[in-house]
Length: 218
Image (cartoon, rainbow, N blue to C red; front, side, top):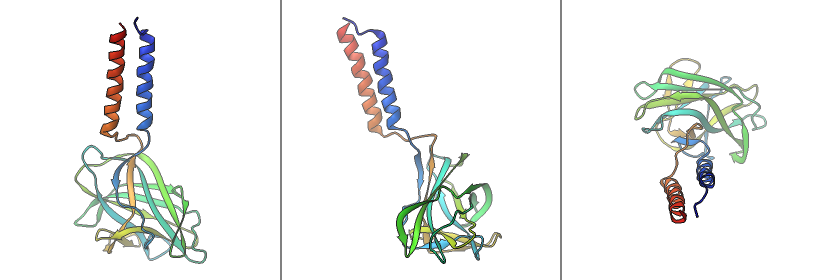
């Protein structure tokens, strides 16, 4: 007895749908480290230090950015953050500091969400922003920048640990100052996912098994 072709196609479709569902979600194309609840660097236009920056390098095959994620906190009277007005940017490298601007995005409050953790006595917040696909090059140093404007308090970007890549800018000029802590952030592409080899293997086994079953029943 043959398995009806329509049933075979349904089974194959189920396998493919399950595979696609397992791969849904944004692919992390650059992981700059997790927040360490240890420190922040102020990056608020109402303060002397207006912008924080951290460098990154993308790997081949994962060079289109659609999302950015970072963490921070506010310090002042309440140690909590009002709704801010974030500006994030991507810059070329210029001898170890941000150089020419590639693209800048105004992202409002950047989905500001309290994490339940504290940096000293200040509430830690997670931030994220989606934007149109930004195509960059592999094996090339770039800079990711964050600046916030708050009506009260002072906002700072959270660190991930000791390092020598983080910069800050005073005012709106082009001068940058090197610091000794790296900033926590990651970049993702929500239009692509990176499937694990095991997922491909399971899909292949399922389709091969379906074909063998149909031949055996034929």
